[in-house]
Length: 131
Image: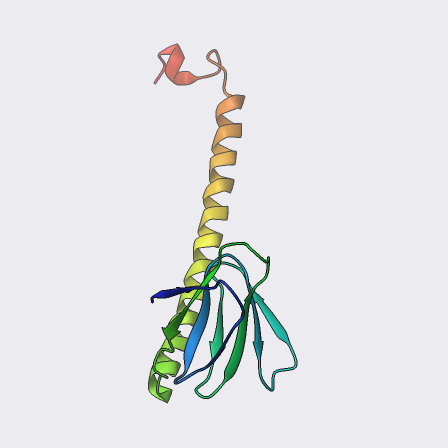
């Protein structure tokens, strides 16, 4: 993605679907036929469509700012979306299992620590030489 410095108000018409991104500084973005204005902080992006007219302006006048366009990724087919949804569900289940295992390990560690603290050197059969 190449960046374009923003020195003054710029108005442009998009030739294709893309992500309009704030590369430097904060941008104030207005799209025709969109009732909301958008404020994009550095690194944030806004989906724009082919034919959209947008007006770009620096949020803070005089502050350095720049914008760039990142091509919109190709849309996935139904099979790809279902596969991705299945993977996301599997990942959520694995995260849940990992959290449960972590909690179990912490409980076991706490129990072992308490048990170890209860045995004194005189109470231990191993330290008395009887084992």
